[in-house]
Length: 58
Image (cartoon, rainbow, N blue to C red; front, side):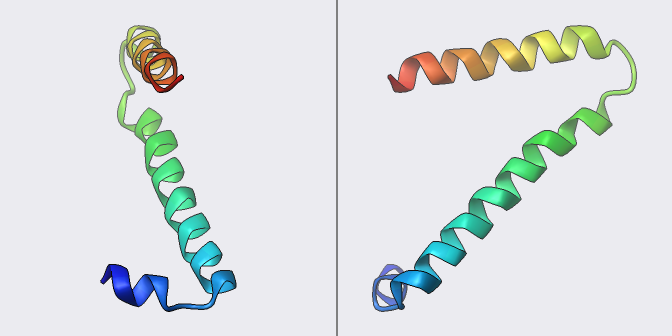
């Protein structure tokens, strides 16, 4: 699978990678619709997890 991806045109590689990032971003943002009650606590928790990931990646 990786060899197949490496052999593609760089423009197609970019399109696939951007589509994958868009899909995961949409799924992450879509989770907000699953939490109808106590949304403030859930948002605070998700923001703290995201902040921890960003700090760990630097």
